[in-house]
Image (cartoon, rainbow, N blue to C red; front, top):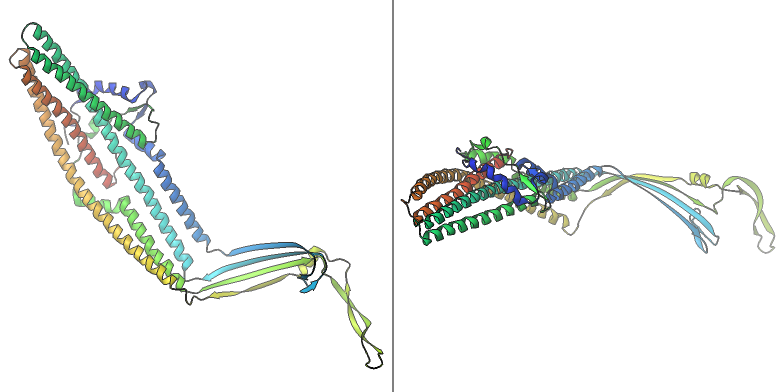
Length: 479
């Protein structure tokens, strides 16, 4: 596209626009398009929220891998017992007061669960990928919004500059009309029309300033800046966008965008996630086989440490009728004076190891319902993916047409502006020598002003439409 920024003569006046953003020029932060995009990406709260969601998904993914590890637990218990209570070392009731300590450790490892742990790892990895694509989508949408707003700022800035020039021209015309009235070459009607042109130009300036300030505020909001912060817009080099491309092959753009567009990648990753969820749900049909083991020990303050035995004579009964006692040789235990905690814990060690098999037989059709719901979610995700592709195809097709139309509109607006400018110069010369009345002169000036505004708006619309195509192609958006 040629003839961009043909109003380069307006640039000296553009410096005055800095006053509209508040503060002195020395204190203002200079914002280029690249810096505006980077500030938005660094500060935007929606991106931070999306990144938190991504971090949570990453933790779920890591936990799914950790679930392959064995499960180990340890427990301990200490109690003070009194009254009639069981002695847990002899498994007999006693009326003694004693202390009891028990320690246990258990471990288990799932050997088979229908590949549920593996499928869950894959599912969580896909969820993490989907959240990453969601973050990329938020970033891309934000970049496009920043570019749109930045171009709006440039458009409104040029409109303010043009409006200021219109005021200067209208004021000059008013001064000349006033002088002409004094010498009798103009009428009061001519003077009134000149005053109306000044008022119209001032209204145009007010509208342009309001639009500029509004677009600046929107840009600050995207960058998460204080609205009162003074900024200066770093205008791009005109020569870099003098040959702006506006003709594109829609099929090529669509084919490229379907591969890289974050909306499509997000939909496809979610579809893969739901497909994996079907596999996860089906694993509940299979039995679970796990290996387990445990060990423990205990201590009781009334336990006795038997260190040997001795043979003694002990009455075991009496003779019926004579009541003569009957004795027998028995072995009596020899008990140590104390039974230390460490020794007792070591002697009471116990352990076990084994396999545990759980076979699902009937669970009120819960697994079947879960599988069916997973299938429905997958089918819905597949439709969502196709819908996203269709929407992107339609959007790009329209964007390519809009880019071509915007270029034609700009070329037409540019020619109209140049024609009105030439016409105004001729009318102005004739008006200065009294060959054209004030009505014709004001009509020519109005046409010039309108065509200048139209040309500026069409110029930036053409730039924007071209940058939209760059966005879909995945190209860096710069000016």
